[in-house]
Length: 127
Length: 127
DNA sequence: CGGAATCCTAAGTGATACTG
DNA sequence: CAGTATCACTTAGGATTCCG
Image (tube, rainbow over all chains, first blue to last red; front, side, top):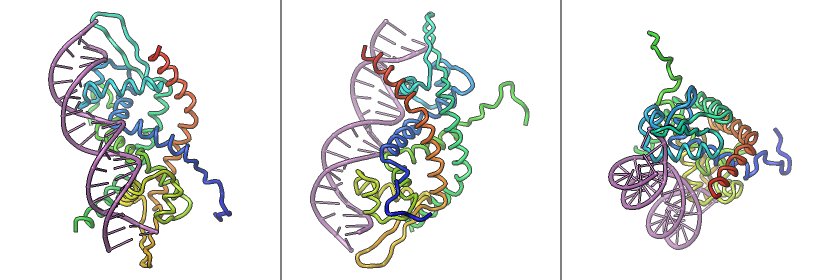
């Protein structure tokens, strides 16, 4: 493709930043495990915590709040005693999970390649 | 393999963690802007810095090192005076960029929806 | 049970100054 | 030009304690 004097970059800084922003939102340590854990069924707080595994109470709370704020997760409180709170993916959340899994496929497909590169790079640095 | 009473979750913790790990690698503040900036042509350090815009020298160095380590970017030093270093995407990097842009499309498509949710959530929290 | 509040550490990020 | 080194600040995350 010939490059004219100065074509539109096909990427504007704003877009990249938003893209990076959303990727880091879902790329944090717990968002994806939580979303994937909710993929098949709604779960209650401590159920979810057990399924996800290894997540602190605080981080689960924060992650769920962020997901709820973004409209990815719906929080339903059942006025029982003791209180019962259920978390479920929204349509938007399901849609995001699908995209995430797509990237997951890419990663699995290229994981060996990436690991090999890292190995080589680190070896070269160490040597 | 015997069929368990419950179906396999279709997600193993290890996978999620790797997925999240890679997403946070490319979801950091600068990786994507850098990759996208390199999409059409190889650039030198300070060229790249200008194109990306707003990135500190240190973060550009770190981002490029990480990308190089992962085999996404190839670093070529031309033994001239003054030194000239060129950065270019590898095939792997181009492939990643394509995936990233796909997510970008998703974000653009759902951005208004997400923003509306956030607005509503924040308003409710403030009220 | 489902959180909130608090404290602490590590990592990401930016600014600045210096070097080959 | 293309970095490295250092410092300061902010945020992510974990551990612990307390509450309705």
